View 1 (cartoon, one colour):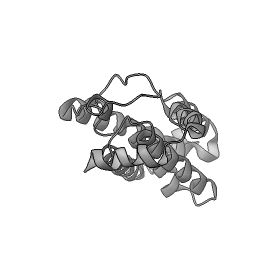
View 2 (view 1 turned 30 degrees about the vertical axis):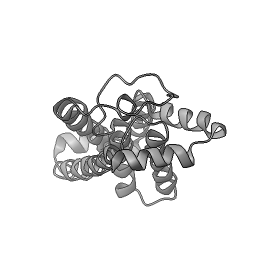
View 3 (view 1 turned 135 degrees about the horizontal axis):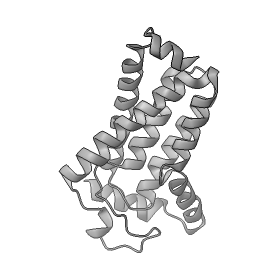
View 4 (view 1 turned 135 degrees about the vertical axis):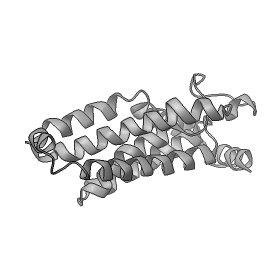
Length: 178
């Protein structure tokens, strides 16, 4: 079913005029630079330091769960290795399940979303969904890879917020947040 949905997306939603846009979207989040820079900016500013710390812990949890545990454990081949297709991206170096892009962008965005109550959180959520869709559009993940990544990212964000809340009254955390 996964491949059927993915092929349908490719046959009905992929248009040459959109290729560059989705390549740009997926590459914006690609190597983690944007996530690290944005997190550091949040940590540097005193008024956003707590959210930056929650995001940082969420991203660390995401790396541990996705990159160091699930991808090598499940070792699911990428869809383009099974279904011949002209690729718009170079071969990916890791396995398909779960989607690292989806997990990390949701680890970041959901941590922000559940911590801040501003309009930016909705813009970030739209951005995260675009990144997730780009992984399907570019045929580098199955839908279940992306869905699992979203769920894992959300769970990392919730776990991070919970973990940080356990230490907010500790003297070292108060000092860190000053």
